[in-house]
Amino acid sequence: TSEKLMAQTVLLVRLAATIATFIAGMKFLLYCESVGALILKAVTLSYILTVPGFVFAALASKFFFDRVSKTVFTAQVNPAVHWNAWMSMAVRTTVCVAITVLYCRVIHESLQNWREACFAYKNA
Image (cartoon, rainbow, N blue to C red; front, side, top):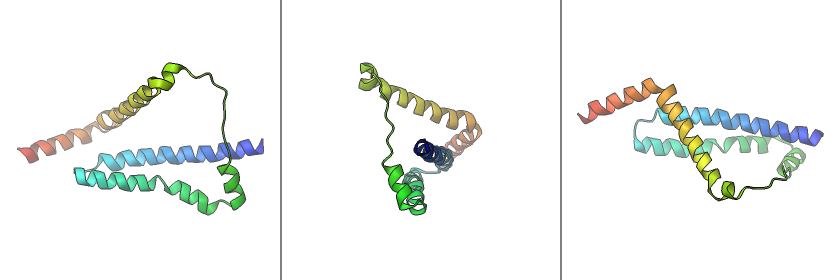
């Protein structure tokens, strides 16, 4: 029971760090002004994603780190053939595209309109 609580706490912290990094990364990439800068920022963001693992490895005791590293979640599930074959990928792709469109075209619509106006002015 204490092991489950410990593992759940670690997973919740990792989930919170992942969500915070996702939001910061979307803003980081959204304000990019060129393709070269976008590539540089994407590489930087991939490095930033490794930071929580480094911090945990540095701050956790050896005993706690070993216990968390050996933790495994298992479930008895009868997998659907279609889900494993292609549907999982289709759902993930659809969710990623939907979140990206929502974030870029709805939440930050004014920024997108301003950028399009700038590009139109630059190309004119």
